[in-house]
Image (tube, rainbow, N blue to C red; front, side, top):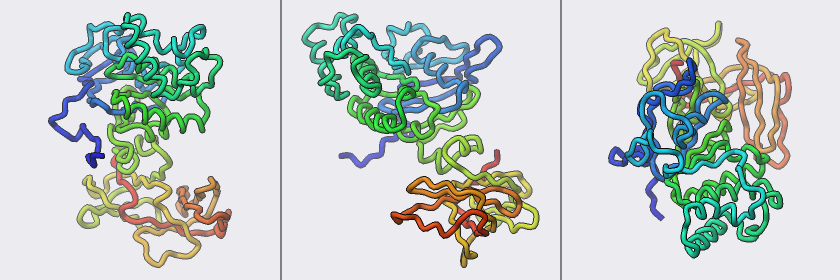
Length: 375
C-alpha cells in the first residue's frame, strides 16, 4: 500500500473536480450563500458542516442543479454547469428520506436509473449485482423496502445512487434517520464504499462527530460563509476562530488581553488578582490586544495538590462531574468565576473517585495546549 497521504488540496498541480467561484445565492432579499469560493477534489469525502440555515443544503442543491446561482460560477470537471440540467450532470443525490419506491424490490430499486437509461440487459444485471455486493445486500435483493431495516434501506439508496457511476455523489443528512449505534457503524461503511468506488462524496451534516469521522476535509459554515476549510485534525487542533473552536467538540474559551512574552509566546491577562496565563501562538498579537485562549478539556489536568511544575496552574473548586465510562469531565469554577472543563481518562476498571464535588483543586496545562485566537 502506498504511504502517500491523500491530500490533493496541498498539490498546486492538482485540478479540482468542483470549483465554486464567488458564488452568491439570494432568495429575494435573503442572502443564503455569500460570495463563496471553494475547491473540492476528486476522490474526496468532503463534509459541509454547520447549524440549520447556514447555507449548506443550498450549496448542495446548486451542485445538483435544483437551484440556480445568483452570482459567480460553479464548475464540475472544468466545465461551467450553470446551463446543464440536473439529469445531464454527472452528479447523483441521495436524500435523507432515501425516496425508495415501496412497490419495487431492492433489486429493482437499484436497477431503476439504469433501466431508464436503457442499459443493455447483461451489463445492467452485472452492475446491479456489483452494487448489491458492494453494499452487502445480496440476501435482500428480492425484498421490498418495508421488509428491511432502516440501515439496510439506507444502503439500498446508496447502491441506487452509485449504480450510474456518477463523478459526484451528494448526501443530504444521509444518516439522520438512524439511531446512534447504527449511525456510527454506517459511517464506517460509507467511508469503505467511498474508498472502494473512488467516487467523490459531498455530505451535508449538522453532526460534528459525523463530519469529523467520515471526511477528508470539512467546511465549517455560518450564515452562508465558509468559516474554515481544513482536515478534521486541523479544525480540531488549530481552529481559525472562536466560532469554529466552539462548534467542534468541547472547548474552554478564556477571554483576556495579550502581552508579548518572548519569541512566539504571550501572556494572557484574564482575571483580576490572577497571574497571567502563558500561551504560544504563530499568529502575532500586539500588547493589549483582546484575545481568546481556546483549550480542549483533555489537555487540562486536574489534581488536589498544587502541581510542582506547571506553565499554567490555577485553583478552583469542583462544581460538577460527568462520568462517561471511559472519561470523567470535571467542571471547575476558578476564583474569577470562570468555569473550566478538565477531562481525565478512566483507565482502571473501577474509577477511583478521589476528587469529588466541592473539592478545592488545581487545574494545569502547558503553554502549547491551547490556541490563541483574535476573534
